[in-house]
Image 1 (tube, rainbow, N blue to C red):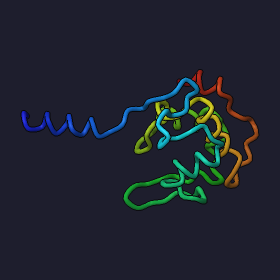
Image 2: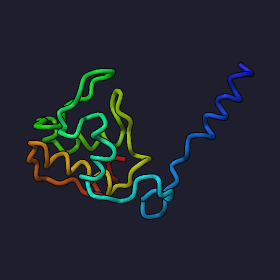
Image 3: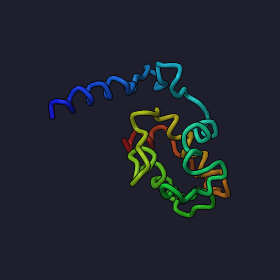
Length: 128
């Protein structure tokens, strides 16, 4: 156990903390800035859910977001983006309310989805 403690300390030091500025954007320019939902999807989501949002199966299972009837209830994708589910991490600490609303609205209105009841920043704040 003594040998494990220094290793854990080094690992913790190597992982940057979620330093946010007052507007919710990351203070470090290497992290996410407030952007539109499409840019956030491309930067964060498409790595697993694929550029066409049709999902993938391989080392893990990444559900399709394209033409997904589960996205009809806005609270469902909102809760998953905030809290995570199974292998997907939650993004509550990594994204602002505006960013979460933007990416959820983007996915719900693209890729064969046409859900028009938009999620607001207030909705995100209420779910946190």
